[in-house]
Amino acid sequence: MIPGTVALFIAHDVMVAQTPAFAPFSAVLIMQVTVYQSLLQALRYGAAVCVGVFIQAGPGFLAGPDLLTFVLVALVALTISRWRRLGAQGVQVATAAFFAFSTYTVSTGNLERVEQLSQILALVGIGSGIGVLTNLTVLPPIRYRSAETGIRALARSLCGLLADVASVLREGEPDSEYTADWRRRAADLGTTVSNSRSALLTAWESRHYNPRRHLPGGLRNQDFSGYQAIFDALERVTFQVASMTRTLHHWPPDEDGEECRRFLAGYADLLEALGRIIRQFSEIDTKRLARQAGGRGVRLCRKRTGHAQAADRIQPGDQSAAGRPHAALRHPPRRSHSAHGRGPALLRCPPPLLR
Image (cartoon, rainbow, N blue to C red; front, top):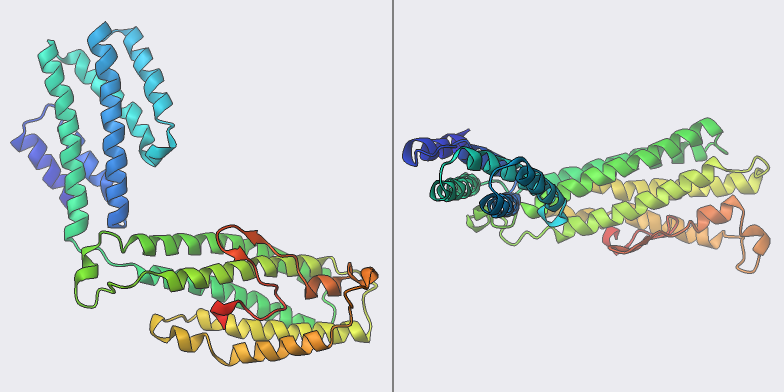
């Protein structure tokens, strides 16, 4: 409200512009959650409007404001608006071109037309500048808590699923109703991962060009690399949990007996230990992060993993056993992740981050 009002006052009362609405519209459009995004969108929006005005100016001065000129301007503007570098502001190329065309048609004489087109650019610049300045002066927060919230939500979802799987496996072989529900919940974790990634990105962007960083207690050295590492580890675990639920869902009916029950009981203990580790990140706190990552759950996970490896009866050369569900659960497929490296096997201890 404030940036729009200030921009309208300057455009209407100070500049006495013919189309003053450009200034408040630009000011409100540029206001974003973070200063970084405001600057980025201001640059893209300014570039889009300049391109749109110049697209109109060329054919307009050469051919005049007729129907053929409008069609040519529309085709060029709509084509350039698809340029990915302009992002969401690409549509403003066509918008600016059409507004410039309407302004051009009602103007008399080339000098007045130049003045009106230049005024559009000036109003856009003033509105964008007021929007960015407002973001800077109101001291926008460094949104590190959005990173914590995203990681906590992902960790809680993982803990809930692992706890449910462990409790059922400890009772014996699960039925298809349980495994189908686990698969659905594991698939739903993809949405949680995307939301957590978005929250982490917002937190990272909130640091840049933020004057609050230079104030006392402004977390000047906070770079969110720790949060990023935790998120990467939890994301890899999510992929492995999805693989585990698929394997359990396709568990053959003939896989039963005492050996199978012992395996599932030990696997349930390991999932419970892993859940204890992840549960610590559902209450993540920057000041206690190192202590949270070295708790009892990690030691229990290492103990359970050692027992599982000692009890492993599938030998490397036993090709007939390699396709059994026991083998799939012991050695789940790894997901190659170009940005984060290879994901850890679920039956192994967590990556160094979780230790």
